[in-house]
Length: 174
Ligand SMILES: [Mg+2]
Image 1 (cartoon, protein in one colour):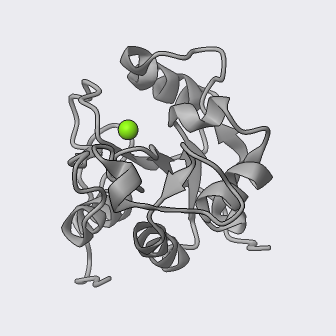
Image 2 (cartoon, rainbow, N blue to C red):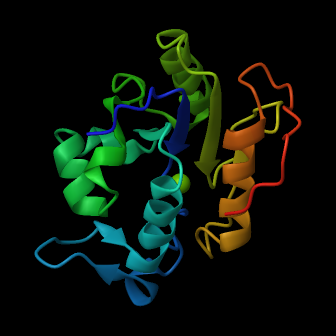
């Protein structure tokens, strides 16, 4: 278990990020032992897991509606293959709010309960209405790309919760 204080959060959507939504039965591979619609593209998960492993102060909070269909963080991890140790102990946004048009409010609600968080990024294929550049929107027909992942990491490294950009003292690379 890491002893690094967790000050940064990646709010993670699943469908359209970790899989390709349209025609996904043809495009994606099921997790062995699971049944539809639990489809995840493992190469996209590996991209996320690799990036998270580079940032010890970042953890994932699940903002996807997948949070309504799994019992706990252990099950979410086993179904998606997101590394369990990178999922925050308060692992989802509010599970009573269930509509995509509330997702921004759900994320802001979670942040209001965690003042220790100084930076966050949102990875989602929907237009969530964030005014600041904290949201990286994927193409639901493509899923997460390397370029989008780089943008997420730059947000987590350099952008404060209030929307101010921190000028890096030295160039960092992923
Ligand atoms: Mg989605």
